Length: 333
Image (cartoon, rainbow, N blue to C red; front, side, top):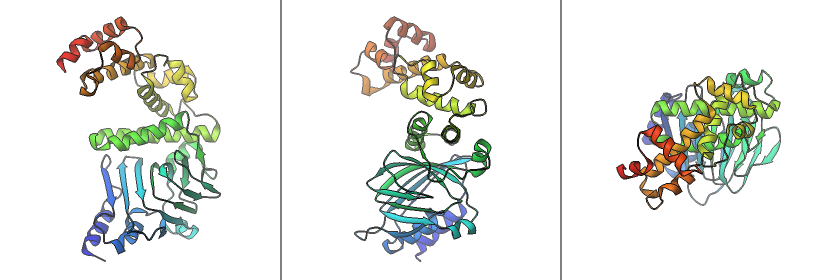
């Protein structure tokens, strides 16, 4: 084994679980070509065993990013074609019983055998239970996911988690918001502070637990999962604030909860759903006015693109919030 690889193994063995709020990156770059699959087996895929690379055309390449939170991790995994397994013997031998919700981003061909065999396509959101055997076969791919501790999932779903292995979550409602939040957090992680990363991972954990509850029982306990629905609602509002028809009723409908339940989730944070919608529109408009990429757009167009259909209302609300008119804000940028 090379000295460089010895150092990477030593660093990895002393890093987990890592410090909350940090980003951990592992890559085969710099590893001798003949050692790359062994490195991936020993350092990266600690839960799974890569049995072989599926191409001999070039040395195996892989990359992993982890954003560490207090009770979960966001991960991004990309590699050349690979087959990996987690045997029943390995499940009995190690202490790993985490549950992962994995989103396939890019992959021409992928199969998951986890109680039943299924093809995995880009956009699929699949649950993996590491207390049970798994086999995955993937062409060159990129996936993101959230790792959940088993005790957190049991708190929400109870002790019987046998139906989770291989479950495919719907890419709609809170599942769609979870997908968007995971992708955006991983993309923006380098620009976030450690505290912001911790908050983003916590929001992903909350949304993931709510998505599991909705799929398992047909509904989520909004009283118990208020934070999950609050984070999901904030993500939906951030995404759709430019829609002038976005209202608290539409937010509740999209999340599958009642308007009263949604209001209670926001009240616990000292906020109003409607006020957050308007504040998000104003903040989007403020960013656009200050951005050089939107210099060619006039103020009325920016107002419309931020969800305002009435220019005078936009001007009045903007000045009330920021103490200056939209036109003055542009001139000051």
